[in-house]
Length: 213
Image 1 (tube, one colour):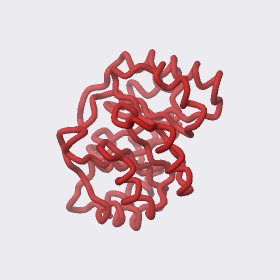
Image 2 (cartoon, rainbow, N blue to C red):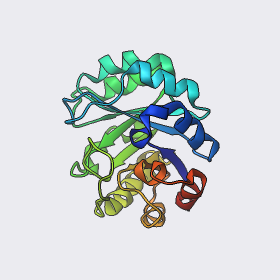
Image 3 (cartoon, rainbow, N blue to C red):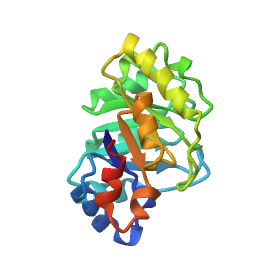
């Protein structure tokens, strides 16, 4: 299991230090939530802040767009060369075009589903992406409770991936902790995003290892 601490829950007054600390504590990726105040009712960080995060990080960035006008945001952040850029299919009319735009930049494309968005909508695009991010809370704010139905959704996605894209990575974001991590692994998850569970701890290494089931 790979762990991607979400810096949405970090101390923004000491952001570089927090990013370095979780990298040193064993994080595999640094998860960056970019929100525009339109797709979700919250705004987070612009490219200058993410550039500072990239400079501080010794692990690859995993950028999650919760935005409208996705191609515009890809152009804003592409020069940071993250490992992944993920975007919500609920927002984008031309999904294949955006997937190719990301891949053309040498970045691994991923798509995101909100908790109530069915896996069946991925039928004709799952073979074209490297990762699918399943939201296990409604996006926009950190610290929410895990939605248990996402366990069944993860299993359904893993079954679809086995048929159409066996190398697909499944990432889970929202309310992840040491209690549901084993259940998510059993359901087929590969990467766990954790924000408040990691950054609310006094021992980053201990909590990251507690998720690595």
